[in-house]
Amino acid sequence: MNICVCIKQVPDTNEIKVDPVTHTLIRKGVPSIVNPFDMYAQEVGVRLKEKSGGRLVVISMGPPQAAQALRSCLAVGADAAYLISSRSFGGSDTLATSYILSESIKAVEEKEGARFDLILCGKQATDGDTAQVGPEIAEHLDLPQVTYALDIIEKDGGIQVKREQDAGYDMIATKLPAVVTVVKLPYEPRYPTLKTRMGAKKKEIPVLTEAEIPTIDLAMCGLKGSPTRVKKTYSPVREKHGVKISGKDPVQAAGEMVEFLADAKLL
Ligand SMILES: Cc1cc2nc3c(=O)[nH]c(=O)nc-3n(C[C@H](O)[C@H](O)[C@H](O)COP(=O)(O)OP(=O)(O)OC[C@H]3O[C@@H](n4cnc5c(N)ncnc54)[C@H](O)[C@@H]3O)c2cc1C
Image (cartoon, rainbow, N blue to C red):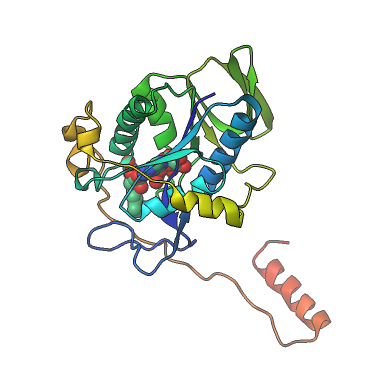
């Protein structure tokens, strides 16, 4: 099975800061990692490849430093990596991002000399957080899609996907090729070893610009190809409604709390 995994480099922090003027992420001084859901997607892909053979290719659209993220995937089972990078792609919203990735997938298929049977994405990226890119890639490529996957099993020439639900799981069967987005798994992705890290360092990561993606329409890329605009970003104001009873004898404090709750008509 030939697999393509889309990975995004994201800031390694829970506190995403946004430039108040440009409304873009402040990345300076913030270390980067591979989006954690994408590492789960890659692990699912590597396990499938180990079972049934084929090749696993990772792609990422981003600035030149996103090559680091691709290299870390090469160290944990990916066979090849391509960086999709051009000034024309900067400022893309999810629609433009998914369009560029879809056209890149076709260009990578040409370079690899084979179609992908499966395109894997993480459920969502921890910075933009929209969870739109995976499903939009499926739409652009006119492929079936399954979201929130916990497991993928090859069956009857297609796949069966164990899909996370609020109250249990769905088992969804689909033919291939298909797009699947992956959630947090009940196990951790594998770690690189010194040997696999050294191997990954030696691999070349081709950079694809619009020149290498012949079908791409630049009018659908970057800021000008993006129908959404971030007009304003702000953090919600934290309102302090709590009352702290401290420095007292516990029995006395409990009594005061009961009194307080009774006054507030909560008891
Ligand atoms: C504060 C802020 C708000 C934003 N709001 C919006 C908005 O409302 N609407 C909008 O359209 N865009 C918005 N964007 C832009 C959005 O972050 C980018 O378009 C981004 O490239 C894709 O969206 P996402 O991070 O939400 O990805 P998701 O849709 O959450 O990502 C899902 C999966 O798609 C794959 N993927 C995503 N991006 C890439 C990539 N560059 N390369 C490879 N694989 C990838 C990964 O597998 C990832 O796990 C916003 C950005 C910022 C900073």
